[in-house]
Image (cartoon, rainbow over all chains, first blue to last red; front, side, top):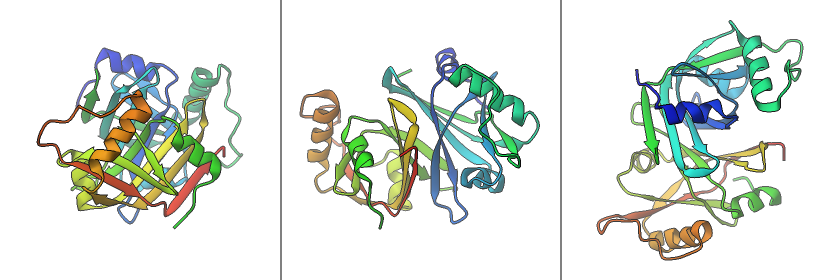
Length: 131
Length: 131
């Protein structure tokens, strides 16, 4: 396990957009943009079961989450980790993210059958540039 | 092969920062931030031999390049491809990128032994959101 420096915690506490890299079934990489929340040193991403990156994480939980400071893109952080996926708290997380990024809640973008997942990312390896 | 819509070409022609996802030797994903140039539908990234992501691409050329519009992060593009790596044109590319992103040339950040690589990314699969 690795901790996050305070400056990096502050970055993730802003409404910053992060990239999530996962591995497809054939071993090739995939990447998507996500909102992010933070719980201590852990990063929390929200997704819906059945999306490609969600399927990827449920099959192979190794991920890389990367963010750069929009005000200074030469400062960036990569967090590599083995993610934990759960449905517990899935609705609360997307509502919290909606409030953080859009200033209102609840999140109403899901269809009735959407299963919201929490992807918890406990940092194992943290790469910093510019911090 | 897949083409890029004009709006996406325009995004890559801006000094936008892209994420490059590669696969480590153990099969886990890795991601880094890069400058980007465009040659027709191909994306061109510059790196230096021996960096982790460069080693990854030379071992397994399957990559995912992702960018979002800084003015509207809900518009983003993912390009999945098998990259081609070459030393040819490596110095010219980093000089061009220095001019695009920093407004001056040449790039002088490399040590004397740095081997500059061109990572050419011909789109095979393009995922668009918001475009």
